[in-house]
Length: 188
Image (cartoon, rainbow, N blue to C red; front, top):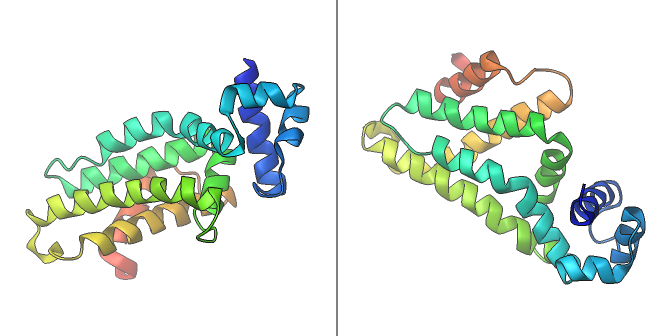
């Protein structure tokens, strides 16, 4: 692992364990076995470290997500592709995903909000666009695309939380069940 990768790894461990605000750059540098100047060389400051951490972990996710969230005139297949991308990402990088879920619910001031909120909005926007496109094929969906976006992401994240608690496996059956419940509700 490179020094930069070790710094990012230690930052995630410490941000998860102690919180972003309670973790100083000295503590991250010490945990990585380097001096503060090395951290500043790579990231500029603590917020730069946060930004790099988010970017490093989400880079591949965004590619897969954007492909999956492109509506192809088959709403079931598209939603299952989106859910599968989230589930695979959560299984591959559970420590980061669990931390990211927590960080998406932080107060509206500070570095975390300023860095994480646009990433949440990027997800909501892409999902809103998916549902808006689908509403052209499914007239009963018109005008509901934003609500569908955040409720679909909500059921995906609830399923991921269930996985973290050992209740489900995030397999193909869970993809189907999650999407089916979203589309048909509790009476499905």
